[in-house]
Length: 320
Image (cartoon, rainbow, N blue to C red; front, side, top):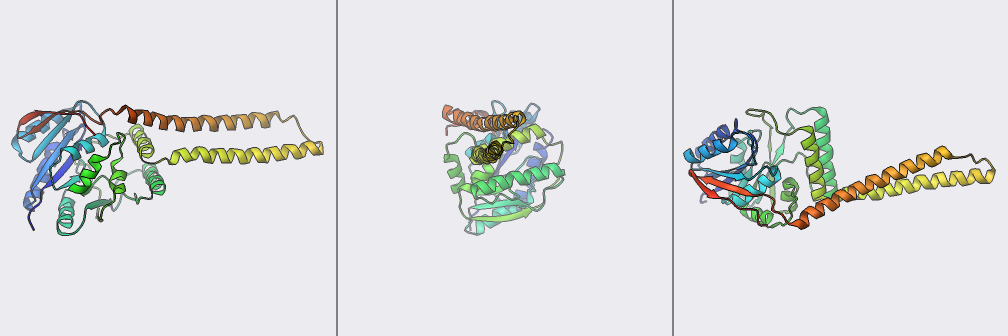
């Protein structure tokens, strides 16, 4: 079977200590296995020297394509910019810190090349070194996504290989607020799984903190499922049942002549209903904000420039 080109998309944010090592390791593994490839590094508005390192890499490594955002647009935007730039017959997404083992890419490539498979999905054997709270939150997050969408999101990751047909399908999807892990499963296609151990970061620390993880989770949930809106209905039903019980209790006491002033009950009931109303309005307002973001049709990202073989080209905005 003829060799088929592989694009490896690597989002990079403040990874000046990792980009050179990642490019070297991936290049060596691909050449050892005779796989024609390109590496598409997407600099997501880094504030360190990541872009300078990528420019230098593009001069000395002909397999490196460096994409530079005009500012930080986030990992989801970087992923889709990489998918749009990639020219390969298949595309692999991986992290820049080598926590996604590059050796597994060879296994993914061979499964895709030698079988009728469109997606080769990397699944985590374990979640690596994570504290218990973060692990519990992740499990809850993916269970919510899975239950509301019908997709199997257990141990999901961005580490996967996509056939060109799948990449084109994702690039054609018009929404601005994206969640790659779920969207790449939602499009369907024939899928195989490979399992990998999450490696330690090659250098530096994770750029994710508690605030950014919570924001990412909320954005991902509201971008892909309407489940939080159903919480409003559930709260309404619960409030109605509580009100019904209290109403019957009050009526019975009135008939029996045992009714009290009931001031405390009224206050508690008002506080409960007011809280639920405000909570519900907050959820509805968040979805309205998402709709507002979508209908403005601003680009998901703006590419300032692209470097390849040491030559810089003008970038472009996302035109989906």
